[in-house]
Image 1 (cartoon, rainbow, N blue to C red):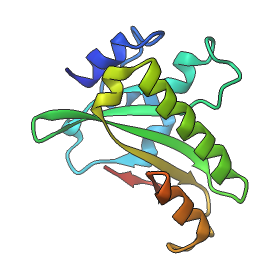
Image 2 (image 1 turned 90 degrees about the horizontal axis):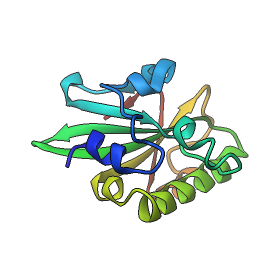
Image 3 (image 1 turned 120 degrees about the vertical axis):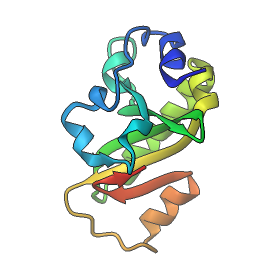
Image 4 (image 1 turned 180 degrees about the vertical axis):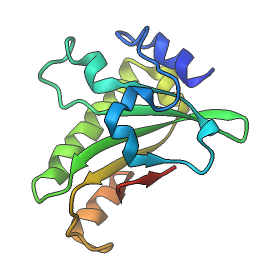
Length: 148
């Protein structure tokens, strides 16, 4: 199953998959890949499920990538990195993982990684408690741009 096929099977996302990184709009500048042909599609998950779950801590984007002739999904949150943001982003990650498990199982099976791309200045060292907490949750943290 391709990324865009899996997106189309998720409730509320039937027509949400866009070519390449188009669904990320201006935030696509925060993501890079050595071979842009590896990007198979993207979805603005936050916008797509906003009406159905207006109070939820929704995740931003999903991106499909072709890796060794197999499509995988990478989930990307573009968010400032300040003292309060770790818990905010971890809440969004829990929401995403629950949504993938209960509403979008096909996308869940394609999921390879979760990424937080920090916007603005980052004051955390590589061994900071914040980064250790993110790593323990399975969330990869990087400054912009994220290299996939």
